[in-house]
Image (spheres, each protein chain N blue to C red):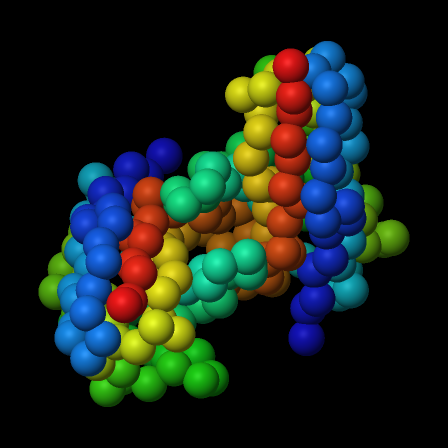
Length: 110
Length: 116
């Protein structure tokens, strides 16, 4: 059974810092990995999708990497802003139904 | 990308009542799912909503408590029946778009239910 762990569980940083959020998974036989953002009391917004054959994906200030052999993915946020404050979840896809981590709660203060 | 509309976005419900959540997608999708997210927790899959047939429920979830309808490829409803305070959660509709292996998951804005 796939297990997904996200570290750290919470993070508070000053504006402008570069951040790394970590996601690890136990079964490397995955189809893809997707990073989401969730604002309090809201649904999930897809940020980046990495196929199993890919090593990384970039969108604006976000960069996600995938290392299947070690069972790890990182989400890199460059030059963080207060508007980045949210919970970030990774979802590992072994089928159409992904396995979610518990998320990293990020606060970026001015 | 699929755009998903959920309603209600938020509601306060009395214990013992039932509430139906609607999920509308702007395109036809085969795979549609319902999740629950309890306070401070990650997402738990309730069921896969199958068009034209009964939903497929995950362990711990039953049709009597969470009846689901899926009349067509763009619409589904989830009913939370005989609610108790433990049902206070965000309920999320989700779809998978694309071929298996390259599919992207999309979510609605969620329905935040508080049972009093």
